[in-house]
Length: 382
Image (cartoon, rainbow, N blue to C red; front, top):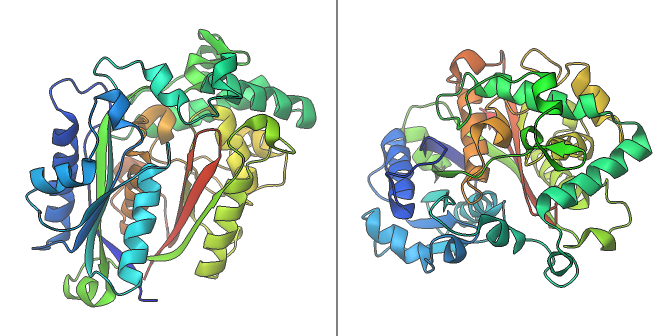
């Protein structure tokens, strides 16, 4: 396999973006990434989007975006894996270049969630329709079940859940692309409107619009650009049961654990080697469980690990320096690549007030639904 590098990044601001269409958001992010990379062509393109057919009635997304980006007739494919659609798109681009098939690839994602669709229904299509959705449960309910189980089994506290939101909003307050760039207090999170006990609206990621793209290239192309060399040193993906009730332990996110193990093995690193991580905090309990599955702390200790400050900007392993899905926003099809952009900016020393010192290796973990799919990538400053 050939080495693969990230040579350009571009994203829109995340939020309720009424003035831009679905295609506009992707094109804005794509053109920014192409300009940042300084390339004059693309060999192929992978576009992550979860459910544009339900959100805005648009399918056949690959061809649409190649056309409006001015890149037709290159091959362009839409990739779907619920909320980790663009993370999987990045993996497809990585494999395309690693195989020798392409030299320059755009991998990106986009979602337009605020244009009148039934968002709850559209998102619920990532859950088990017959055994979960038919019974009336939604994703806040599913993650509330995970949270309650984790609290009962390991003693995780309501305060520890809220601390995830406080930390991520602090980071997001310094991110100009964040949907909610403002700080929140423990009291605000814990006393906010209850969505599904014990989760409040401030434990939950928002409904968002946005696009994010990166340009990937072979080593030969990357070396010519005389820019920081950010190499993808590990990539791993995995799946699990779609429905919670089929899992042996609903506090365990097996797909996250396996995807990370595969990425660590490819990269030749261990959890303690990671300097910063962007993880899929769709709900505060998700970040706590993911910390455990990535090996940053022992099983059941994610809440305590967070409360002790280990995941803060000054901590042992800064997590979600971008603000995460919680503060930055969660346009589901774009989230995975937006995570990668934050890791690349940290490795390049371009994260501004959020910059962590001496970042050499970063990790991005993106998952779909209640953890039925996950993809993990590891990046290194060469």
